[in-house]
Amino acid sequence: GQNNLNAKLVLLGDMGAGKSSLVIRFVKGQFLEFQESTIGAAFFSQSVSVNNATVKFEIWDTAGQERYHSLAPMYYRGAAAAIIVYDITSSVFAQSQFACNPNMVMALAGNKCDLEDKRNVTAEEARIYADENGLFFLETSAKTAVNVNDIFYEIAKRLPRA
Ligand code: GDP
Ligand code: MG
Image (cartoon, rainbow, N blue to C red; front, top):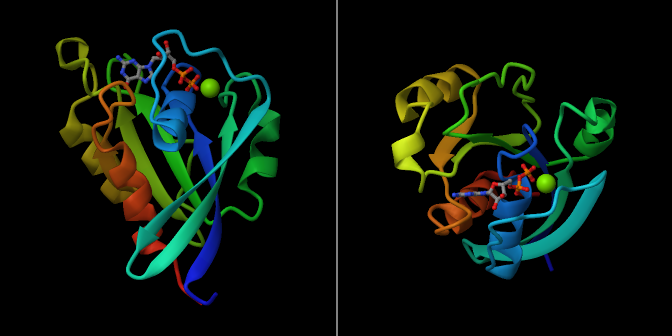
């Protein structure tokens, strides 16, 4: 019906940031300490209800920009939303390859926020980066589930309606 919307969503970010783990937490409610590396791409779907509407996310999980950089345009095509995932314990915070696409709802997820004692990226520096690039920002944990449903819900709320 008119209250239903299908939205392609892509996961972007370095290998090991927790892209697959976030999706699996959202779709299956599970977490694996030793999540297998994604080869090529994986597809999932999950719906959320927001404001009397159902948004069915069609989620494309990429293998990581570094090894599979040439695949990125294929993932982007037709996408309504993207989540750029980084690991808050990583020593590099280099997300500059992801310019905000004005036609997409884009979120920045600072994942592994359960690992506070190993933090290397402050929430403040990420928030500044997000503001400058038109992204909305949440810290997440696929392990503890903190903010995982929330980030998908916030994206669903921001999607343009027909
Ligand atoms: P991807 O390469 O971006 O898809 O990353 P994965 O989802 O494969 O995760 C890489 C590793 O980080 C795996 O060992 C996961 O168990 C771990 N991991 C992912 N998310 C979290 C998290 O929120 N907290 C912690 N502590 N570990 C995580
Ligand atoms: Mg993966």
